[in-house]
Image (cartoon, rainbow, N blue to C red; front, side, top):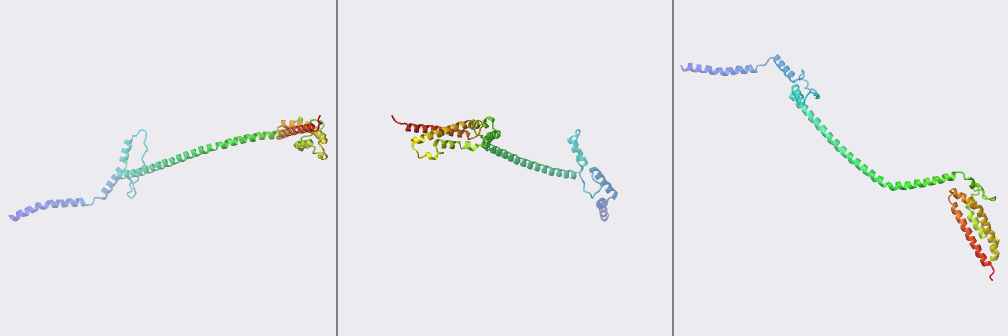
Length: 272
């Protein structure tokens, strides 16, 4: 009886282990190739992957937002048409692009700031230089005015002299175009006539003997001056430089000569 009960109890104890072993065998048994291929195709179709398992999955291009679609619709379409790995890869690419764009923006801001500072420095230096050039501009303006006046005077000199300037003042007058040296030497000639240096034989004579020659020399000087004075006046009116000074010197010489003759005459006159 004991053996029978023990054998009976051992039989049901072995049945659960046997069922578990059968289940393990059935679960560990390989599935058919068709089922695996079918499941793989379903997964590829669901996630939108390529049929080639060796190729790397490429993320489809993100469509641009239309005026009708919203951001939520675009996000949902992306989630439905791409796998998680593709979305994560796309996110990584976008993060890298955003960082690159941010770096370019910062570099542009930095470069533009330096360019703005350099432009400000250039404008300030140009302003300082322009202010320092104002005295030079004033001096150049005065120089140009002087040059303009000189050019106008030269233009007058280049013009042919007027008829009154070239006509002789009297029958014994001279032509200014040919006797310019005589006009320049006129003060010296008048001085020689007044001082009687043209007649050397009268230098050692007495005062009484020298009075008449000096008076005659002064008369000749005044006659020569009367002949040349209209010519000098014409040259002065024409704007010839230096003629006015020559005329003033000649008048001064004649005045001094008259004073000298008067002094000699008063000395040589007999006392009562």
